[in-house]
Structures are given as C-alpha cells and as structure tokens.
Image (tube, rainbow, N blue to C red; front, side):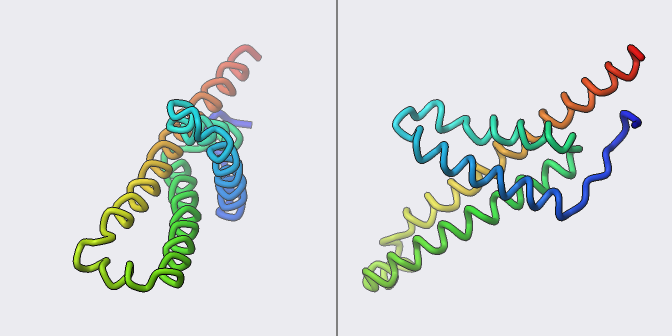
Length: 138
C-alpha cells in the first residue's frame, strides 16, 4: 500500500462523518458543563475521523461539510419547534427580535464544521505520515 492519497469513497466519508457527528453530539451533551472541553471536542473527534480515513485536505473538508449539514438539520428542527410553540417569535425574526437565536445557530454550525475539518485534516496528515514512516522502515 502506498503512502499517497488513500482511496476513500463518498459513502465511506458520509458514514464516518455521520458517526463522528453523533459521537460529538453525545459527548458535547455530556460535557457541556466543562466549556473548554466541549469547545475543543469537535477538534478531537474530527482528528479521529481523519485518522480513520487517512483524510486529505479535500476529504477533511467533506467530513466537515457533512457534520455541518447534520448540525444544520438539528438547528432547523429546533427552530421549527420554537416557531410552532411561539409563532410571535418567528414574526419578530425579521425585525431583529430573534435574530440573535439565528446567529447563535449559524455560529454553532460554523464552529463545528471548522474545528472538525481542521481536526480531520491534522488526523489524516498524521496517519499518512505514520504509514509512510512504517513503510520506510520496511
């Protein structure tokens, strides 16, 4: 096996990113009372996903995008539930009343995607470097 870019299918990336998102969501739910750990959690889970797939930069970006897509879905469901429970809140959205809630949702998605993508890129790089080092040893 060469130390070059590994062949990872889109289906495999989707599966890895979905599992990583689920693990990140569960761990963040449990560790939210310790903000520094919860803040950097996507970096660690992204690292593991990148290591597992030996992700290149492009594959790490795909992992980040898929995880961001999942969180966008979660935030959209939460906003729809809030809209169903409090329709006046939605009416105030465009006048700036609930714009802070939408901004927080966008920041959550960006934070997850950026940190998971960087973690996956670093993990993939380190995994490929480890593989190359082992191949060089023979």
